[in-house]
Length: 329
Image 1 (cartoon, helix red, strand yellow):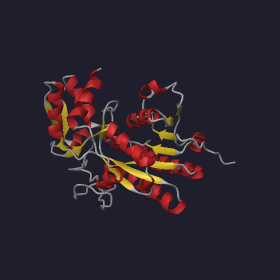
Image 2 (cartoon, one colour):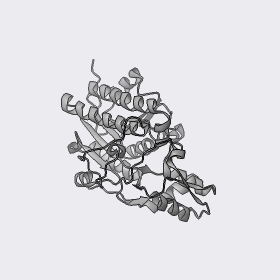
Image 3 (spheres, one colour):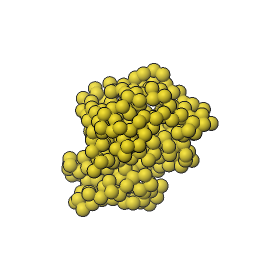
Image 4 (cartoon, helix red, strand yellow):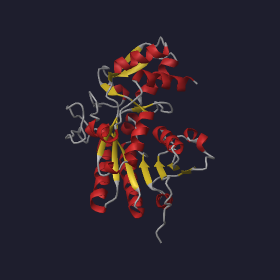
């Protein structure tokens, strides 16, 4: 017997990885908008503390389990309208140290989610990453650009390749099985609750500055990134999940305010009032011999701007101040 979902105006969202940094903020925003939310997270990188304040909300529930538990995933998928798939192996440090875990978690996890969604015709929004652009030199990156990855001998590129497979798989389910899927390529999402444990640069810099430790810049610091506040990313994800013309398409989600990592360290020092020195650490020492990095990573956000009239509202200095306040409390 096929489970019949409620036809009420509110929707039921399942967030995989919902106890993580982005997922917990998304759960809050969805509840505030009147939706029902279920979080599925094995707490391997997410934290229960991120969602503890939501426990007891009449439209919220959580399950501490893995997306590879087919029985649990099937039950939860049968009850929801939309699955936002955020569960993944993330962070450069984790990717370099545990490449098998990275590949298996990302590809097998996404396959399990898509299979479950297809059984119950749930819409799926897959969170992908700017890493899929690899070593591309055409900046800003557009969704239909060719991509260039490094050699398979460097585990650095395992994450990018695994997320590309996720995207191929999601689009295949859309084209072959008619499953409504959407792909959001996220560019360096940051904000409160993010931790520097797995290589996230802003919480690492801010923590070092607040503790008076050296701010460690990897490489020469001239590599540049664009950082987008989690509140802006959540708005984008919610908009894409609701818009019928987003289905079957790929969207860049990120800020276009580009900053070098060295300048980022200097701005962190200024905002925190820290006397921490800035130290340069070679990539080989920070990660692994032969580590390769992307020199620039800037998104072309034309597609999502045209569809949703979306653009980031929070500046980088505001982001740094928010992260500093959250880590200092």
